[in-house]
Image (cartoon, rainbow, N blue to C red; front, side, top):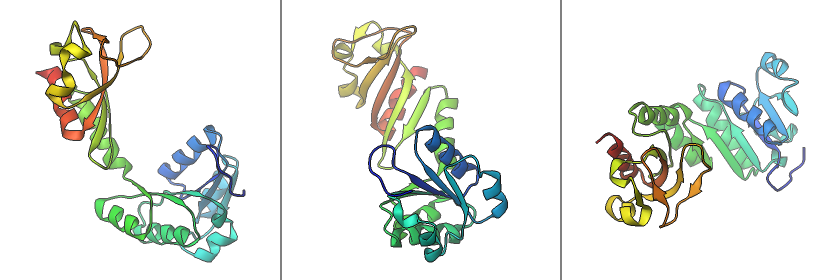
Length: 224
């Protein structure tokens, strides 16, 4: 698989544990060619028919990665989690080969910092991110939640009582609470992009964004 630009560029996924396999399968569904790599022959055999190409290789060895064509990819995902040394050396090898975008899984904050220092462009802590998301949903204040690394969040929440039967302009939510309402979802109707004249009803759901703490405080209003 040679390098190619665009939205369907091929991706190399290294480490076929639960995370790597889930990412690789999702990429295939989205129309990408995937080169899946794992050092365990039995795992490679198990997934031989699932992805475009599946190979056994020691991803910590830069030359081994070169031999399987890793240097021909612009995007890579490193799903190795439990073996921190292998994870770090794999990222380092990909960077040395000139892979432009490297996404890597980290199992803790220290692992994440090391991955960033050796050149990973994007570090994901799936357990931590999912735990944060579920915690916010369990409280009942949010229906869904995404937090970004730079202290910014997007949430889906029920419209607080103080906003009912008013337009967004009348509620003044941004000025009072520091959040931006992106859109409104009414039961049985299509999603509506927020405008000053958009009205809010009791059963509506709001998509809001802003600084993480500000979004959390606003969504807590649904329980006040």
